[in-house]
Amino acid sequence: MARYTGSVCKLCRREGQKLFLKGERCYSEKCSVGRRAYAPGQHGQGRKKSSEYGLQLRTKQRARRYYGVGEKQFRHYYEMAVAKTGVTGENLLRILESRLDNVVYKLGWASSRAEARQLVVHGHFTVNGKRVDIPSYLVKAGEEIAINAKSLESAKIQAVLESNSARPVSAWLERDAEGKKAKVVALPERDQIDVPVEEHLIVEFYSK
Image (cartoon, rainbow, N blue to C red; front, side, top):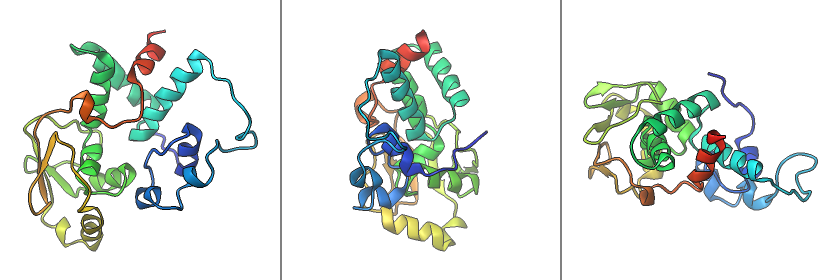
């Protein structure tokens, strides 16, 4: 799949808010959104009037970039959400939240979702005792996720664990005292998902 290789700070500036794509930098004074709170490019500081379609498109793009998902895969998740019972928009966010790379990030085992995706691909995590190296793997309620015993010897993993140890864990996840194992208590409810998007606009965008 094609992957965006440009400056991720430009993506945050384009959406006009922090998407937390660059780990610790997003929490510091160096964050581009705080320093240059306008869209990138020659006309970034110009006044823009957004249409209903433009608002829906921006919401969809924001959610896609927030989770680091390509358009084709995002559309597939939407179709999965439609097929499920319940509210389509909430189903979509629940599917995105249950991606393994997002779960690894939520557990404080990575500084950003991009870093979490890389660590998963390198095989640093197991699900129910079996190594899983697919970032898009969708975790299920009751599954146990752990850091590989061999990976715990890695200086990189140790540094990541130390820098993110104080980060609070979402209520739908349960991390053990040592911070090396976790369990998916249940898939998240809407009020447990802190994504800065109005999901009904995404549904409206794809429903046209």
